[in-house]
Image 1: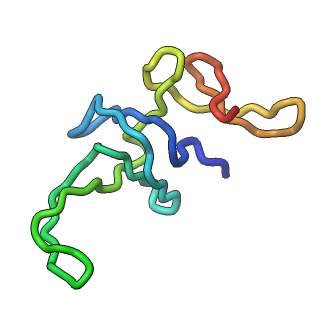
Image 2: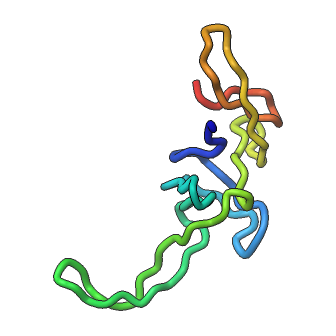
Length: 105
């Protein structure tokens, strides 16, 4: 199955505590249907000091469910759904449903 949201995509949160916030996808976890988005769903964790790092309160991104984020359309800047299209040369590319523009070159 081809992924609708991939690492490096610009996404916006469509529901939940961070609704309206946008950021870049850092990592996608397809088995858990979750993604890490820079600057979204930031949580505070207590980290124990170790040889490699300092202890204390650490703020980091927590995974967010894929159903709660949507790809940002390049033309309008609004959230869009993602579809797929097969080009003449046989490549399968992602397409923004809002504008019809191809997402992967």
